[in-house]
Image (tube, rainbow, N blue to C red; front, side):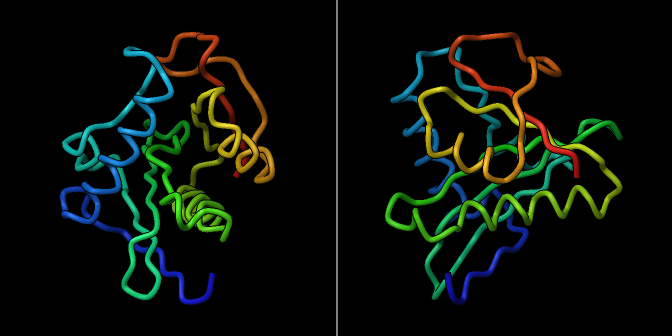
Length: 152
């Protein structure tokens, strides 16, 4: 998408909270309670998290975050692209930006959890080179979750 800019932003800014709210609404419609692993705005404000927003022509198109787990790996969180902006590779560019943040900080692995009811997300991650793994960190295995990782 021409003119797309991805930059670190505060998750507490109104445009960020609108994206986060839209993502929450979307995920809560797909999965039962207890099967969404959503970081709150407060959690996104912690020093181990970097939150980014994608913009083009003054429109906010999407967001994502990277959560550092010690020095072991980064976790991709809060990936979302507005429905009207999908298909323009915004998600791919946000993902690459987040991976680069991890890589420049010396991390060798990026991991994520997504859901089985999000085929578009699964395609994005598979195209980007992520492979399926078992549950990691504090996650528990679930028929509704897919766990993935990629070497950076």
